[in-house]
Image (tube, rainbow, N blue to C red):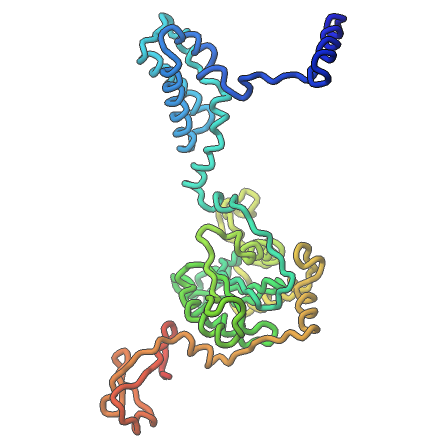
Amino acid sequence: MKRRTIYTWIILHEAEGPVGLIRTKRADRGKSRCFISREWDRAVSTRLDDEAKAELADGLRQQVRGLIKGGATGKIVAVLANEYLKKATVANGIAPNRPAELDRICKVPRALIRSEQHLKKVYRHKKDRKASGDDRPRVKRVITGMQPMDCVVMDVHHVNVLLKREYGTTGTPKLLGFMDIATRRVWCELVFIETKRGVRNVDVIEAFVAMGQHFAFGLPKTLYCDNGKEYLFADFLDDAMQFMVPTVGESGKSRVIRALPYHASAKPIEAWFGHFEQQFLKTCPGYIGDDRMNPKRPALGKLPTPFAGDFYAFKNVLNGLLRAYEVMPQSGVLKGLSPRQRFEAHVRQGWAATVIDPDRLNTVFTKPETRKVRQHGISVSGRRWSCDELDVWFHDTVTVHIPQYHGYNALR
């Protein structure tokens, strides 16, 4: 350190105190010192004023932003931005004699392009809505104070295990899952579709009714589901759950919650499907996985040998895997307990399932309609219906509850 510097510090300290030794900040700190680049600014300084430079620089930035929003890579953005700047510069009457000189002064700085890279999220939102949804802020879930079946998440999953049908063809079953958030237990039903169709409302209803009869599950207080056509029946469940379970919170509040589109991470059962498949179903003979072109497969692009047994044999295997899952300790919200241990702790504290008769629950999925009584009978769906009560019914109309999803040979 030079002696002159020390003397300067002493003079500043005697004049201003300790404040005089603090380094001052530049008045233009944080502000751009040039419009595009120093080479470009010097080349156009004699022909363009600051207002024209700012307008041209803004047009360049808009060009860069548009390219990034469109999905162009960094190299492509740099090339096209350079060409845009060349044309804009020449259009303003600035044309060097040598093309190499024009290339030099119209080279867009990488810092300018990097400053707009955050707009890649716009392209991702347009082309990959799921990835954009996964990046949304999250609310941390806790199960403190929750009882079993307070909230149940429902979803349908494609099981990647190849089964053989009765008439020789092969296919994969569908897994209808209902996850209890408080204990992480999962009620599952398998559907093996013989024809080319998807899961129907009837299939999901039958799985829900079976869960409602089980003493360890029963009827949920709140149901969380998707917006697919196979979940239209859930709107009928709202009244049933309001009737069977005392209202908690706002009076008349719906107990059926619909998930946001492209928001799979909001449903814990989605993560469970992936975990259960990779940790348990993967061990089953006939497992095909998601990627059939994976080079690590034994026969690239070909299906493996199907499961040796029939659908019911595979169902028994699946139930065994579910029992193994229930006794496996989990970190996170269960804090080292298994789903079964968590459930048994609630049972010891007095919890009991709200079990409902299947005939009563099936009446929920009906629509009341009025029919005229003629000759002590009514007409529904082109068929004539009568009963002992209608034989002695002397009014003109009667209310009949017509099932909306099931086939029927009897009416309520």
